[in-house]
Amino acid sequence: MDELFTPEDDRKISSGLLKFFAIFSTIIGIGILVFYIHEVSKSHSMPQNGEILNLTNFGAFGDFIAGAVGTFFSLAGFFMLFLTLKDQRDNFHRERLESNFFEMIKIHRDNVSEMQFSYYENKKSKVIVEKRKVFRIIFKQFKDAWNELDHIFEKSDISDIYENLYLNKIQSNKVIAEREIDLKEFAKVDIIYSIIFFGLSGEDKQTIINLFENKYKRNFMNTVLNFASLKPRRDSSRWIQWRTISELVEKEKIFDNILKKRTGENNGLNTHFFIQKDDKSIPFESFYPDDYYKYYGGHQFRLGHYFRHIYQTVKFIDKEGHLSFDEKYSYIKILRGQLSNYEQIIFFLNSLSEVGRTWELLKESQPEKETTKNQHLITNYKLIKNIPNQYIADSINLLNYYPNVEYEVIHPT
Image 1: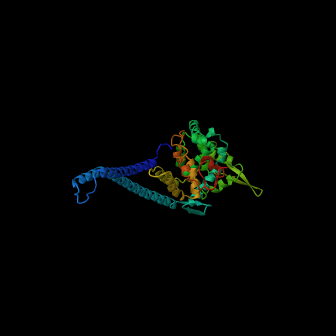
Image 2 (image 1 turned 180 degrees about the vertical axis):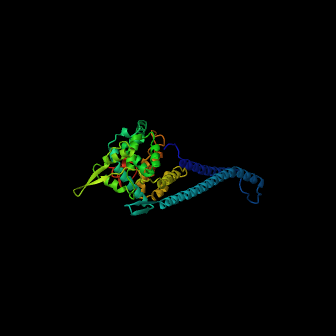
Image 3 (image 1 turned 120 degrees about the vertical axis):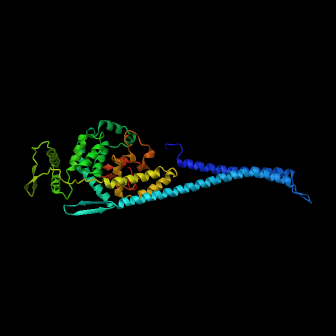
């Protein structure tokens, strides 16, 4: 823990002190009463054989007892009253907290229920998915991009990807170093998820470039973004051409030529080639105009407020001083129970990206600074506990990034 006492500890201590002083005051009052009754009984006795009771003496004794003993009893009553009011205030705070929390859960459900995404399985067959099924499609797009852009990362060194200063900062981060995170894969997840999140329109590409300014090298980013932009949406007239090229062994060279043709780097490039089919050579012209809707259109308007709301909900409970950690975990467990497996997978990928690394791995704008264990929200609350597979997109190992999460079906070897 970062502090000697947590707010929960302070609350327990203050309640304990109030109870102690109330009991202590009562015991002192009773002790004084017993002591003086015992002392008075030595020199005084009740009237016998017609004797008259000395009301003056007994009245004075009663006044003394009321003044001395009554003060301690009143003090004990004050402490108990204060403790009762404090408990009532705490109960009111708890009721208000629960009301706000469950309202946040309702908003989360509404966010999911409002999600909708339409795509084309072919040029004419339009499919509409809703609610949690949207996350499965988003993950499929991530896997597609992961495989399609793999060759660019494969042939690049880490120094080709990162700006030197940013690389030095991230390498000095203790959390990254202790978990031995592969920084090349880390960058690949970050960049590809950003493509899926923001999309690849001209404006969206510029947003990504600005986001990664002074982090990844501009030439490398342009290469990745331009190559990913070659893929048209399935209802585009360019789809057949893209799919045909992507099935060829020399696809990377052809796509590279298309990009060069598009930028005018070499207008003399040959954009015609032949496809072998049924022992015949069929002439084919590759496309190069950038006049189609991109396959990776982006999901920012779906995922942006979705993740912001989840983050605010977790932080709302995490910073609550009136709750013990076990109580906090119980509340956030309710939230985690609302997340499907695909939601947790996208949540995991989001947490590795620039827009979500503050969940645990890096401090915003300070990549060299270590996050404390109290700030490890994903690990502390096991927010990705229910992901069923250790490897995401067949190669991203969950345990490399969050080794201390007690996964439901995944166990470290």
